[in-house]
Image (cartoon, rainbow, N blue to C red; front, side, top):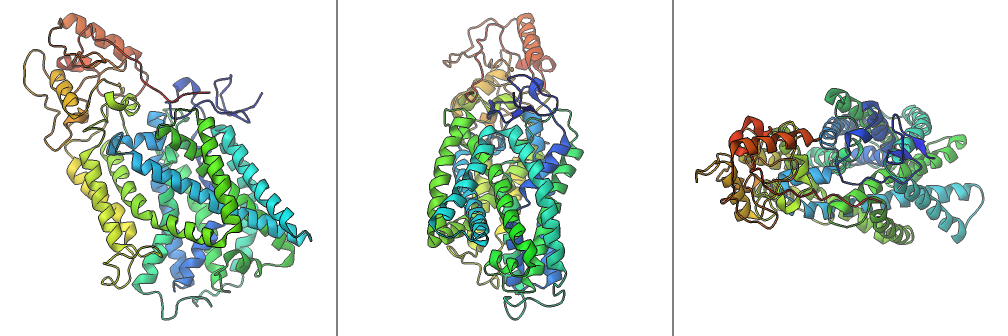
Length: 590
């Protein structure tokens, strides 16, 4: 019997050291458990990684002084308030972030970002694995063991630790992050003290750019610091979806934010301090030589542990990501794809230095995509007040988030605006935008999130709003069919169009300006237009008011998820009593 996570019992519960059976399917209320404090350990433990030491050192290498670089590190840490707040969407819907992002982009419009996010997750897992394996190899070397055997064993141990925890699933990941955090926090606190002790608080460090940072140095430091938190935005709901609906939004935001802030800032400052004392071009070697002999071996263990805590988070989310992309397997089985690619990639990166450098450059370029994506997602979340039609998120072609042929025109337009801005102002090894030179070498990629968010808010302010207290799934077709369904839902016997259809392209969504769904679909999957799954018209059906009211009442009672305002308040949107129902499709389970 596995270790049972707080308050959950039985074979269907979320249990540590047993394979999780849930995937992106909504978590029922009966299986929800835990509290906001659990999220503190998720973000605190997963960010006790040497990556932040490297980021802090890079800020100094770009020409910033100790205090300037520390300010940038603190700004980067504050972004965890945004990451943690985005986790509220998981509490409200019980599903993963990349399912929720179907709301701003549409079911099909969400797929490209899903593919790229999976690539990023695997890429960062490979990089973390290689860093951890290199640290373990150095540990073996300190013990006097050299050669191919310890090198292969170091990689194998790192991979097995990561793969095993991620395969067990959510409860095991949470437990591992907490227990790793106890050990890593103690060790990294000692590291911080040792590095700060002789830090140069006024200089710029031996490897820093001469002549001060300039606008280029400041912008590059900000991009490096913000890139990590941006990479987390497609996953916060993955770790909050098991929390009870009664979880306090304020407590959730503060707990998660403090976890990520404390660990990222502490390690970032450690990197800044180290870079003021020595050349940190090779961050691991540079840090190690600043440490006393008694701590050097422990330092290598800390690097290994930090790489594992970060890898299990990204690898676990990659399995949910694959389900979003349509892999028809359970979460644990889908994870086998990620494991196979990670193992091959890690082996290649571990033995091919050029591959590692190329992979790092490629991943750094992807902020061009994820900064604008994040801006649209967050703007949509604010407009909806983090209330979504949960059933419609999983309904595919028949749901309210199908929009026009599976794409949300507003979301795609805003994303495109952000992508153009990012591409014009990006300064990386693989791509330099045409506006970088006129801007004095500034990399303004991070601001593309603001651009896309503002564009989305301007275009969607009248067509997007919060769903009501229960979230039904419905039956709708592509653009024309969805519009036809919405038209039927907004009338009793009149041919007039429903008021919820906006000319800006939101007609297919069925959302009125108040945020309620104009289609009036119920949680049982019945369409307000009265059409069956085959798309037949409801025009010839009996629509007696008493029958419609009875049907709506029973459907509302049966709903267990957040949804638009019940049709009892809007009798004109009631479904005909004889409207056929269908079950909501969910991801397969073990």
